[in-house]
Amino acid sequence: MKEKTITLPKLKKVRIRGYRKLQKLPGRILNATIKQVGYKYYVSVCVEEELEIPVMSEKRAIGIDVGVKNMVVTSNGEYYKNADFLKKYERRIKGYQQELSRRKKGSKNYNKTLKKIEELYRKLKNARKKYLEEVVSKILKGKEIILVERLKVKEMLSKENNPKSVRKSISNVSFQTILQTIEYKCKWSGKTFHQISTYYPSSQICSECGYKDATMKDYGKREYICPVCKTKIERDYNASRNILQEGLRELKIAA
Ligand SMILES: [Zn+2]
Image 1 (spheres, helix red, strand yellow):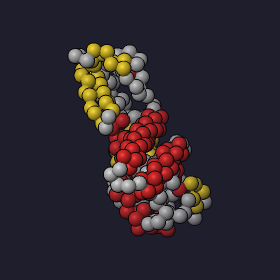
Image 2 (cartoon, protein in one colour):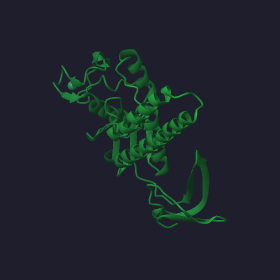
Image 3 (cartoon, helix red, strand yellow):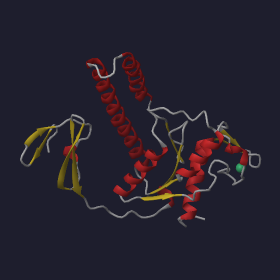
Image 4 (cartoon, protein in one colour):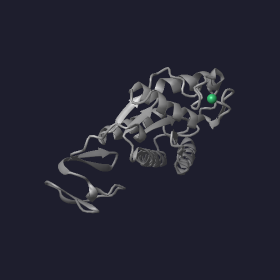
């Protein structure tokens, strides 16, 4: 594999485009699979790599809160929002959809516009995936134990308490996709991935003293103000710290 070409059996040297530096692949190449999506061809390369099993240590654990307002917040206090640059695709898709509604169904121009929409969707999907993978890689760097929530809690809370303000934007990454990306990246690199118990109320508990405030179910409350220890802490950051503590407890790594 070179920077812009890949040598395949039968096809010989083929030019490739893409964001990954393929020449830096670790380990021994086992095989390559070619897939056609629309009029594009994708190649996946399977490699074999020996990994060391990491030591379980509390210091290298991280809690991750996945949400609507902030895509991802970590117990280290890092915030990652949904990528704004993806909105440009969303706007262009909407524009073409309007154009499509003016065109005669089945006409040449109709099909042209339809093709443009499909191409934009594909670009959006790829850009969204790439962005998420970059964010997750950054978060997991140097960490060994990754603690996250189970999807059900969030889904339930958002439906019950926030039916209208959960924005359905096509450029937003879904909770499920985020969790899946974190999980597969952990498995890939031999990290411990643990999802805490379904009904643990991560946003209702004060991460400083453990007091539980049931009114925090309300999604509108962006700050946790503890009446007991007077801690004032941003909602999602507080949740991520609780996820870390609860996760370590469940894994019996810390009390
Ligand atoms: Zn408190």
